[in-house]
Amino acid sequence: DAGITQSPRHKVTETGTPVTLRCHQTENHRYMYWYRQDPGHGLRLIHYSYGVKDTDKGEVSDGYSVSRSKTEDFLLTLESATSSQTSVYFCAISSGTRGELFFGEGSRLTVL
Amino acid sequence: QQQVKQSPQSLIVQKGGISIINCAYENTAFDYFPWYQQFPGKGPALLIAIRPDVSEKKEGRFTISFNKSAKQFSLHIMDSQPGDSATYFCAADYGGSQGNLIFGKGTKLSVKP
Image (cartoon, rainbow over all chains, first blue to last red; front, side, top):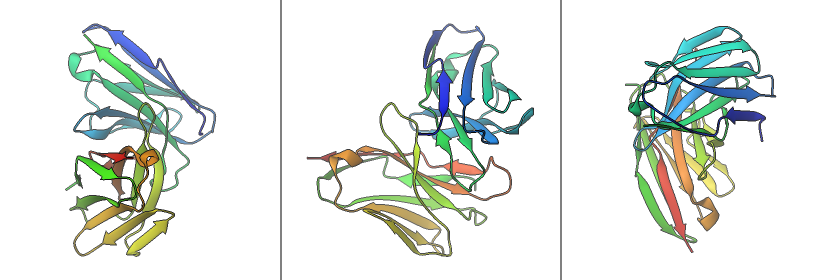
């Protein structure tokens, strides 16, 4: 399995609180991604990174920010969580091979 | 135009049967089509992929069929087994930046013993 660790794996929080999810990789891959998975919506890209301090928005980036200060770490921050952000969040990494992503095991976030 | 439409949403197949999942797209710029398999509680994992210059690709019991003129592609699982029970996602990529991989909404496959 690709060396990807997501933390926390489960979190329950209240509306309006800030939340940070962490993705750590040991593969030294250039590209890192954050997706959210919701029933009926499949996997939707939130943000991705193509290098240290280089990030770009995905399909559903509103309400989320990211940072990548080191190759191995990619942080996803919800500045003020809302109930619509209740979801399972997946981090993925890639060496750049077309269509080949390696996913972490997910972080389940519940916003009450 | 950026969507990948996947059907059915769920599928129940008897052990030994053939599972068929279909996907369709509109954007002719898509030029790489991977399929991902996701078991409960796990992240998706790449299963098999195809380029549009090939009409079929087979890996073991898994086969992708591709119809470029119809802009459709499908996954066939032959001799389906209970261990194949998972959610399957088709995807399409049009190269360029790394943010161009679009996923279908997924098909939950249950293979009954």
